[in-house]
Length: 58
Image 1 (cartoon, one colour):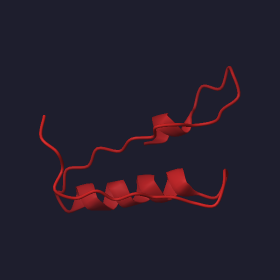
Image 2 (tube, one colour):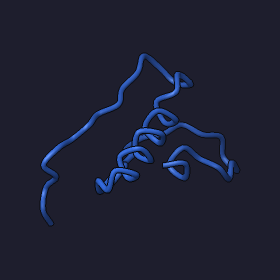
Image 3 (spheres, rainbow, N blue to C red):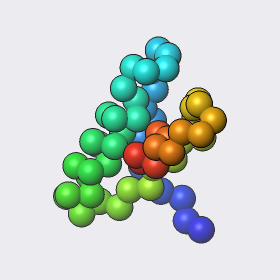
């Protein structure tokens, strides 16, 4: 496994501030330019039984 040449970290001040949506939009834009993107969400909060989680958005 090779390490990426660039790393972008999206961080925010708390939950529900738009980090996932910004990351998803940024990923789409980079992919549109032909840049390979691998998005990761190491931790997320959700209500048990939810079907659409933030990780699924990414």
